[in-house]
Every structure is written in C-alpha cells, then in structure tokens.
Image (cartoon, rainbow, N blue to C red):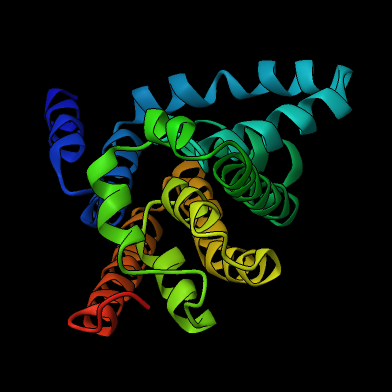
Length: 233
C-alpha cells in the first residue's frame, strides 16, 4: 500500500499531459494488488450490499449522486470515478453503469466549458495551473479542427480540455461531439476495470489498463506531433 501511495504522490509531480496514462497504469496496478489479496478484496466488497440497501431506498438520489460524482471527477483532478464504479456495477450492472458514468463525464465537461467561457480566466486559473493554460491555449484556438480537438480530449486528463476550450470560445457543439466520442472508450474500459476488480480477474485488469494507457499515450504523441512547429491552430 505504501508503494501505491508513493507512486500516487509521484503522479502529482508529473507533467499534466503525461499524467493520464500514468494514472491509468497506477489505477490498474492498484486494483490488481487489492484483488490479489482475498481477505482485503472480501473486506472491501463486503461494503457493497450495505450501499445497495441504501440506494434501493432512494433510487433517484443514488443515480443522481453517481452521475454528479462522475461529473466532479471530470472537473477536478483530485476526484476519481474509481471510487463509485464498483458500487454502480454491483447495483445496476455494466451497461447502465457505463451509461451513467459516460453521462456524468459529459456533464462535467460541459460544466467546465461553461465555467471557463462565461466566468473567465480568474476562476479557471484557480482550478487549473496557469502554465498549463498558457501552454495549450497558445496552441489551440477557436478555429482548431475537430480532429485536433478530439485528440486533445483523448490525450489530456478529462478536467483539462473543457476549461481550455471554453476559454478559447471553441464552438460548443463541436466540443460536445469531441467530448462524447473521446470519453466513450474510457467509460467502457473503466467499467470493465471495475468488473474485473469485483470478479478478481487479473488478466482483465492488466489488459484493459494497458490498452487505456496506450490509447492515452498514442493520442498524446499524435497531438504533440500535429501541433509541433505549427504555431497557434
């Protein structure tokens, strides 16, 4: 556990552009480590029936909290959807949980975009580091092609593109399309990670984690290759 915590601290110091792939690997490794311990896994899973009983009494509230927590995870770097995914899978199954998670991430992205577009730089600077804003804001403008924005959404941690594209006043519907397309594979894979954890399937945890990390890494490489030396797009 101490190794997991030290790696998490290291992730905070990584350049934000590279953090998504690192955090994915760290999450998959952490889930695999916990699942490998029968006692620890059984202790954690033991809380799920209690959560189910609470949610069944207040179904609408339970769904709302799940979606809102997912939305917060798409807006704030320190909030993670990994906490709620196993509960959702246990309660509603993979398909519905994936849909709710995807909707929550889209909602969070839309909120981030709206905050930055209508409340401006002072609010966004308080939520995101100024160097990161300046680095990518100077390379991606409101005229950026859809493909570039899709790469940006795939490569960056989910809380970053909404704020930056809102500041750039990028076309909302194009942003929404890129957001929905980019978050879908991550939502599907996150649900399979959660299911792999509940079922203690190490091959699923390692395989899905590796695929997600590769997706984020390739998207980041393609993004930097495309914008390198081209000035502001």
